[in-house]
Image 1 (tube, rainbow over the protein chains, first blue to last red):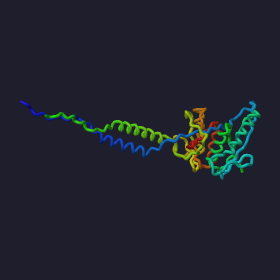
Image 2 (image 1 turned 180 degrees about the vertical axis):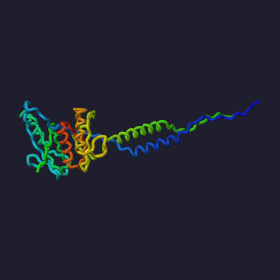
Image 3 (image 1 turned 120 degrees about the vertical axis):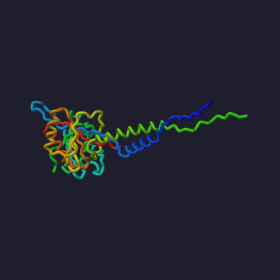
Length: 146
Length: 137
């Protein structure tokens, strides 16, 4: 005698709800995530204390003034456009200054004298120009120029 | 006579590569968002073309200078006084003498506030400082 058997269906996993959840999470993280902008370095070394007995090579020093209105001066002459970050004429001058210091066997040293109300971005522009000219010895004056 | 006909298989859509991709994207964004939480205080730091992204960032003492002049040190979201900053520098100098001070200052802050930080650094014998800057695209 033949007996009737109930056909068994293949077990199937419904992943649609899982995919829904994953999509929702993906959209959430995409919307809330602010990607990290990597920060760069502009390093300087402040002049440290030197013992009296140690002889010091006198560096060839130049002072760059940064005014509150974004103007940059070196030896009384203005460099760069106050509205632009780049200081190409200052970079060219600093390159010549560095070469002449090297020829005279001196260390090229730049002192940045920024006014109290000078924008930090403008000071960084000057440091950027020094880095572009290959001048590594940069220091800051203690008091703002009058 | 009956002719046997091949039963065409049901047209199926293989979703597994798409699910793999979605999972990978999900993991990427989860990790990236975790990084952004671990960052320092959000500041509009200046841009500089010649800034160099360092390979390693060890032994750094992070000082944030806010736009209005407030000074925050790493790990403390609220601004500190100059005396507290001096104490933190002193402690850092004792713990790690070769430490570098990483100054993250807002691009629009007055340089006066940055100079205050550098003056205290010099007084405490920390002479190695780094300015944080974004590299423009």
